[in-house]
Amino acid sequence: MIKFTNGLVLDKDFNIVKEDVYVDKNKIVSVGGELDADEIYDLEGNLLMPSFKNAHTHSAMTFARSYADDLPLDKWLNEMIFPMEAKLTGEDIYNLSKLAFLEYLTSGITACFDMYYFPEDMAKASVDFGFRTVMCCAINNFKESLAELEEYYNRYNNYDELVSYKLGFHAEYTTSEEIMRKIAELAEKYKAPVYVHASETEGEVKGCIERYGKTPAELFDSLGIWKYGGAGYHSVWVTDRDLDIYKKNGVYAVINAGSNCKLASGIAPVSKMLDKSVNIAVGTDGPSSNNALDMFREMFLIAATQKLNDKDAASAPAVDILKAATVGSAHCMGLANCDVIDEGKLADLIVIDLHRPNMQPINNILKNIVYSGSKENVKMTMINGKILYRDGKFLKADVDEIYRKAQDVIEQIK
Image 1: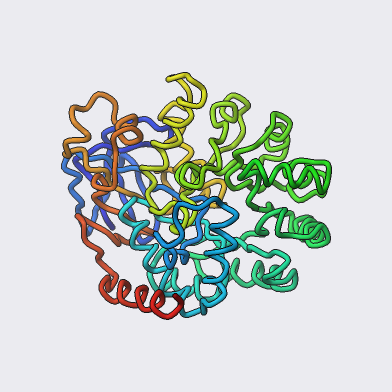
Image 2: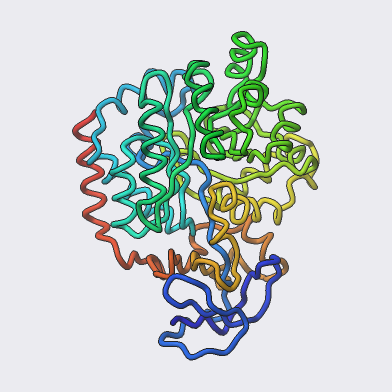
């Protein structure tokens, strides 16, 4: 049993308190109690808080980091990314994902919502590394099948405690109506949410209206795809009616400010989402379009671009964005068992170093995390009760080997 003591704790109500927290095996067993412990973690006045969850990413796309930059989305995807993706193997996915896991740890991210291919290799990489992964199918007209989607759903929801799987498809513009209708049938069969790229660009929405006379959200709603919830990744070009559909179905808008800024896709109307009580979560998107897997940068960009877009410095309050990156993302991913620090929750925790210049003086710790925080403040990252990253060191990973194998992939597919 590990005892976290001599510091601050962000509790389940998002209040900062001075309490001891006890972790036994993979769970939090006590907050504020007094138990015998085998190991003492001295927080030294720092903050223990629930970890960040990355609610939308493509981890193995580390292969294209800084390879296809400074291009609009359509050219970036069709001319640069798709041709390279076609050369990837399952072993490549395994090695490239581990590189992403290292970066997630440095940013206090303990779980990713990964939409990519070769799920067996992604699942194996997650288990071997000790990282928590929720996988999501990216079926479209060109890759994977409905039979595979259902097989994956049943297989990877019974695979390992660190792995789970969700129904999903790539996007409306890459997926036929027939496939979308079949996905809606699967959602009904399993009473399950569905996750999809939605309203990322203005052109995507215009194209959908031309094809169906509806926005992506209206189309998905009419087909029953979101009957049991889910998420729209990006959700930049959404209308008021779209947001009403999100609210009605409990659909999450997953905000990816870094990628949307870099690809000039636009700014999601987060303040309007908050006003309408639409569920929001935070994701980095993939390392080929972001290019970092940095939750601190995402939180700052969401808050800052929203204020700029609204011409209102009060838009998108910092604490709302912090909650979206932790609790909101966890719930979006089906990880309500590790969303906050509370007894019985899984021990996916991080320690924020408050003894760095960017955290001083201490006026408001939570606002500091969003507005001035960075990866340098992540002192410890714990997943499922195991400390994987501490004081700048990876404790259970052969870092040089992961770097070498990732570079080997690049040399082979270029």
